[in-house]
Image (cartoon, rainbow, N blue to C red):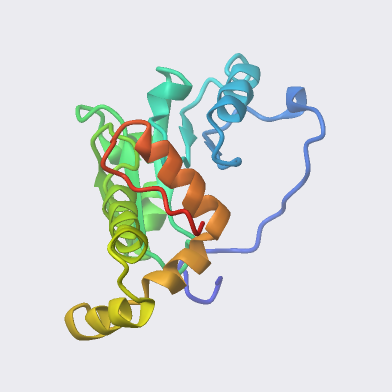
Length: 193
């Protein structure tokens, strides 16, 4: 990964066993996709962290955690998928709020999008609606997986939606779909997941 990213140097990492010992830096939280865990963590850190606090949520609104939390959604593996979604008020300059991280992203040819405040932001909103539709066609309309893949092969440059689900993780895919359904009744929750 380091070879693929410009300006990436070896650094040090350390474990903080007590959150009281966490330094006051710009913080990007990337814990499990569970709103209560995200809220509890921010509640514990908000008096300690005075700099910008981001959540890397895939399916919640940052303001569901707290009004002072912004969204910074990147995709795994971050070195290969060069898209970062930022959810903050439009009047805030992304270069200012992201600081040196903004320069690093631009230098490494990432696209940075200031997204609207909706669950899933833009990329996951599109992707998980697609996943929902694929399973609706298979489970609800009895299309075969092979017929589905034939359509993807011909119309969508051999895109493999099932491989994408494997990369995301079946459990994470299910959780994101459930979270998006809370805001959008048209989301189909696959029985097979």
